[in-house]
Length: 109
Image (cartoon, rainbow, N blue to C red; front, top):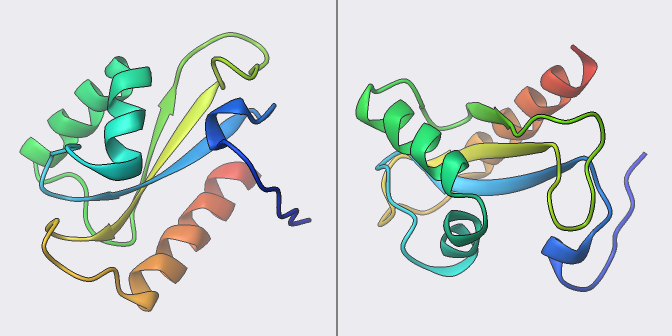
C-alpha cells in the first residue's frame, strides 16, 4: 500500500527512509546532505560502496541502523537508491523504476 504524506520526511514515524543518491560518493546538497548530517554512519557505508564501485544506477544500498523498531528520530533502515551515476547526470526514469523494484525486493526479503 502506498500512502502520500506531506511534511518533513525526517519527522515521519517509519521504519525506513529512502535517500535518492548518485554513484559518485558525495552528499553535498539538498536531501542527500540532510541524510549525511543526520546519519553519518550511513554516509560512510555509501561512500565506501561508491569507492569500491559496488553501487550502480538502479541499485539500492540498505543501511541497517539496528534496533527492533524505528522511531521519528532514528528509523531502522536507510534505503539509498541510486538514481544516476554522477551528480551532474539526470535521474532517468528507468533507474528510478529499477531502484524502486530493488526496494520492493528488499522489503519482501
